[in-house]
Length: 224
Image (tube, rainbow, N blue to C red; front, side, top):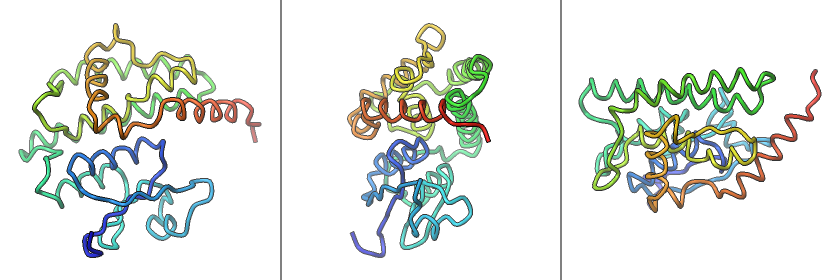
C-alpha cells in the first residue's frame, strides 16, 4: 500500500466502537494496518491524533486522523465509493439509518451501564424497556443476509449484541432473550455465521476472562 493511501486503525481489541470501524473497513475491502493501544497507558499517537477525548477508535488516512466511530464509518463510506455502500444514497432513508444507529447506541450504553450500576435491577429494567422499542423498530430493517451487502445498521446491531453470550457468562445477566426479542436474536446469530464476522468478533473465552476481571475490579473498588 502506498504511503499516500495508507490507512491505520488505532484501537482496543474489545471495544465495540473500534469493532464498528474494523468491520466497516473489512466490508468495504479496504486494506489497513491495525495498532492495538493500551488505554491504561495512552501512547503519544493517541494523544496526538485525538487530543480532545484521548480515546479510540482513531482512523488515520494519509496522515490525517478521523475520530468517533460513527464519523469514521461515514468517512469510510464517502471516501471509498468502489466498495459496498454502508449507508443509502436517498436522504430520507439515510436519515432513518442515522436515527436508529443513534438509538442502538443508547440501548448499548444502557446495557453496558448494567455492569457498573449500583442498582442493577433498575438498570436492567431500563435496558429491557429500550431494547423492546428497538425490537419493534427494527422490523423495517430486518435483513435477509443471503445475497445482500452488510450495511451500517447490521454493523451497529452485531457489534452491540454479538458478544451477549460472553457478557451473560461473565455477569450472569440475560441480555438477548430469543423469546423477548426473536427478531434481533435471529438477526445477530445470522450475522455471526458470516465468515467476515467470525474473524472480527472477539474470542469468546478471552472476552469472558477480561469481563470477569473487570467485574471483580468494579466490585472491589472503594468509593472515594
